[in-house]
Image (cartoon, rainbow, N blue to C red; front, side, top):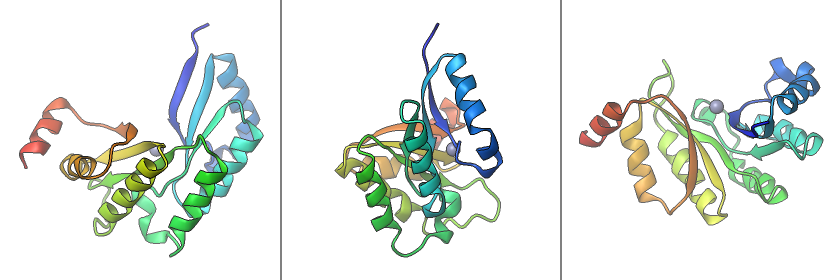
Length: 168
Ligand SMILES: [Zn+2]
């Protein structure tokens, strides 16, 4: 059987919690060897950590503030983030990113959350799981201006969009 790696999901979602055992069993049966479960903010990192403890061979946790939830974070979010990253030495930083697509989502503050978390990922040598919608120019600028990091992307963009974003 081909071994697959699910690089991006949100198994911590409330709507899935009644089905976790079934989902994990189905994933195993279909050849998924491991999955990255991406947190979205302080309020769900505990659930992500619980999944990593419950299914240690399957769940690769990732802790980060998603751009949709930057306004909801407590002032000590960086300290809490570092605690989770230290407790799980192979965890990633995510889901983090930039979003200028979602209606009514504030842009202000997104870049600061994103670059702060990119720096933490680089400092601790962790992979970053990155969300980007209609913000490729600022995203590429941020990647160029922060230390080296490893990343996977959750996004939709064509090569033409990427190229035009560099022309802006
Ligand atoms: Zn995601």
